[in-house]
Image 1 (tube, rainbow, N blue to C red):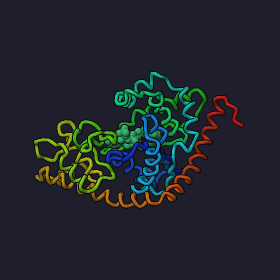
Image 2: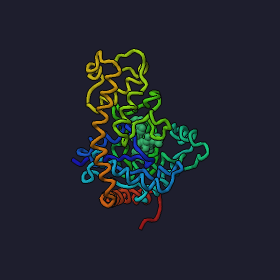
Image 3: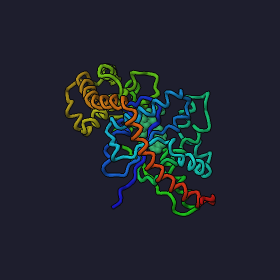
Image 4: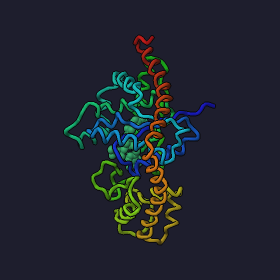
Length: 331
Ligand code: ATP
Ligand code: LTN
């Protein structure tokens, strides 16, 4: 039987957080044996917020290194750079003509980002989900592993695909979001009611994948909990503790009941140290591989060049089919 196709990406906005890792990247690693996987660096999406050019270039390469250091095998997965495949932008333009302003206006990420960057509400920020739809539909992806915050973008992708298919006949496959049960939304350590975000200005709120063990221990020690001193999972009334439990549970592959049992009568001090150690242990080998890879830009280049080639063949085929259906002259 033919393998199902997976596509996902992360913006090249800099250092990844534990949220990005547990919500997205960690699931990707588990999928690499069963599926035909395409993982890209969403560098074009990064342009929707003003970035220093040199920093963007550097972030793009370091994100590839991080993908591999986290466990993505470049021989099993197609790892590529979004901007290297012009078909994404071409398909995005076409799909823009099948997407309504009203639909885009409802996107919560647009509203959040527009509020955060009120001085630069550019049209790229508004049409961001259409480029994301093009990324996904160009590969006929069956599944898209992302964090919970991207659910709405998957819904609009399906709406656009359905609209196109209903006019021109079966063209795009309907993609589905693949969202992990526990790690879908890792919350901030200082404000456990908001998601951990790499753009948060409060360093104590987020764990970066490149944080030192000392930083990680310090941040968990200072994490906000509650006064009950009982390790119990309840997102509503105990958001801080529940978030720490989720982090521990994913890393140790344990259910929330198992975590509750393990820390029965332990108190928050011991529990927090255990969570910190689990994270330190998981990140140590990742960091070692990451810094080694950064020393070897030629190797990284060879990986994305190979990925670019495979990705562009697949995306170009789909673009040609779309162009033909809508009436553009293709040959
Ligand atoms: P920013 O803070 O700059 O908006 P981000 O941290 O949300 O960025 P993205 O590049 O937008 O990062 O997201 C990359 C992937 O990580 C997506 O699949 C997203 O759903 C997931 N993700 C981001 N934050 C979290 C989180 N706190 N918990 C779980 N998954 C997350
Ligand atoms: N918008 C996504 C990044 C992204 C993406 C994609 C994810 C761009 N294109 C295609 C999955 C599939 C985000 O995580 N912020």
